[in-house]
Image (cartoon, rainbow, N blue to C red; front, side, top):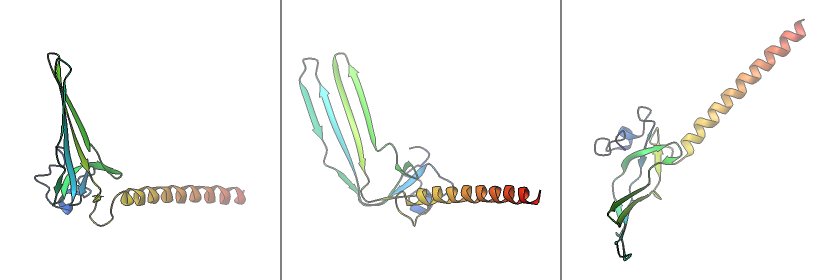
Length: 138
């Protein structure tokens, strides 16, 4: 998430633009939660989940036109025969924006893909017409 630098890009216009194609702006009201598990050498297990933290401000985050990436991060540490693991989860039900700040969620990526498909279709149609016209002239 270093490229998206959430402490530096603090608004949608700074984060979700063509200069940062690997970043998305997560809308306010998304949640963050930690789950911990420790397994002692004798097999005893301790589990703890934090209460979800609701972010009231948006945040710049790694992502693509199809959504935020790295929304679940797992870490496991072994010390002798004991194991400690942590999972951090981001829930983005509030929505996100990519490459611009108007069109929500994956719609911008869908528009870009549709435009590329249309452009390819026009090129093929043009080539087909040129081939047909050149054969008719012969």
